[in-house]
Length: 271
Length: 302
Image 1: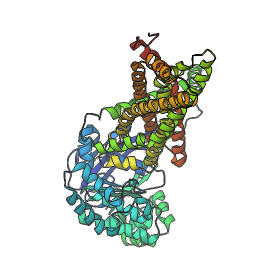
Image 2: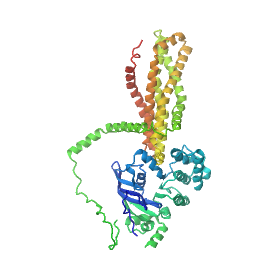
Image 3: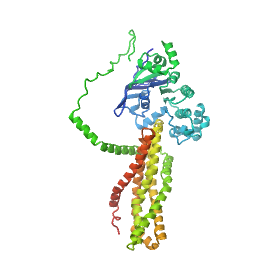
């Protein structure tokens, strides 16, 4: 099985396998070209990891999925819908399909943990206060944050903040959960907790997960599918085993530099 | 980059070979004279471009915020919080500055007019100055230093910690949620603060002139009523609406477009205060001219 970067079916139609489909996406900031005709498909219900060096444009890429950034050219299809053709009103509705967990959680620091998690519900639903309270308590409880409701984000540790960020992303029951470098700056145990949380959230809520990372240990624990972003394009994409056994010199170098034994095991299994 | 495909299966038509590396040019192209002149012009006028860019940026921000004014959800709470922060939070310092300004202006006027025995005019001149100019301008400068800086810092921090992106990712428009309430609240509370500035300033002027300098109370009040026209106060009120709009807009713009970490937020905050203060003073002249032509009864009135 080779690593296919994109599927065969037309991207503007709903496909049972591919959820997010990027075609010829180009983005530059001023004279700085960041993404150059990127093609990529991401699998439904799986954990898709986008790998790449720091500053390779991973965050820029996923911010396009929900139109937080607009490309210079190209298309993004989610379930066959061209995201760029949506007007402001449609986009607002459309964005509820997504949950985005930010690198540093991006919690509103003027609100408590509970208010942070209740925020999307208050904005987008007509649920009563008690219903909102129950949903938030449920999500926080599932992530082991039951006693933090009344705390402010400043009082939490980095790992806890990320979990609150996930809880906030989960309250609206999104179809796609995106994580921006979820394990950066965490110790190995907290990293493992976050990994488990990503897998658990994916299974429990049946979402398509998109994770951007360069933490190899974490990547090979969670990834079903990996895409490698290098030199403004997707260099290679495919199942984790395929990427682990990749013959591409850059990918090989990138994976080996981390010295993670899991990679060797996976690579050995495939070869 | 290419994968080895098995040859015995039907494969979709292969994509055309990618121009992996364009052949490097033998020598860099020589810059033509025309191009060099154009570059020279561009660099010479760069400050003007940047200025126009800044104006354009503010107008776009205002436009994006104001289109949300009639749209749901209205979120009254955010307006109240902004009004509380900008208005109520600035009240003590506005009152203090108002009282001090009224008192010192009155003191100087009484002493200046006393040379001609006209010290009872001090109330009128002080009132005119505060109602028309000092009230709105000083209130605006205070707000630029306090609320404008605060708005820029808050929004700037939200920007660099991705909280604004988080809002957007949750399908909440940040222009509607963050910018509009601050601009509207400032437009409402600044005139109110200006009125209070005038009231407390005149209180200070009364204390200074009548109680301390022993100017005749009846004459002082009579002259005040003769010289200060109600339309003067209205003019100050109208100016304050523009100044409030200006201070909040500049603060929001500098915060919203902050980049580069804590230093970027600091630079944005400094800029917000400087731009709002300078623009207040410059805009004051043009606003005065326009308002005086709209309310001609005040110009050289009875």
